[in-house]
Image (cartoon, rainbow, N blue to C red):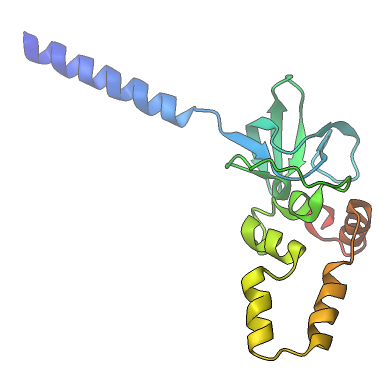
Length: 175
């Protein structure tokens, strides 16, 4: 009499556990500054709301390069997969109005382009003290160091990058 009860209890528990795992909602996080929640899975569709980096979203369905999601405020729409991740991004103060390059390109999941945050930050800051010391000890010409400093000081706005992506039909703008 005890065996069937234990067996059915165990089976019920396992079935409940498996169903809860199968139907668990996937949480995604916005990894790009000012990502747009769209009314349709197209970059040219109407924007429902602009989402801040780190915003939590619930995945409804995946369709090609786009995810249908719901926000915490119960707004449902589409977002390009390159602007979200299953991992919550670290939120840093970039110290400028542009949001920093890491904020713009930090969420390229689903892309063939990979950059970790530390590498992106180093490239934006320029040479580390160790790299400068190495350049000096190896005799790297000052002209080369100056050229690198000149390149590092160049700024590109989010609008310029967005225009580049549109014109090149890259990412969410790809057909």
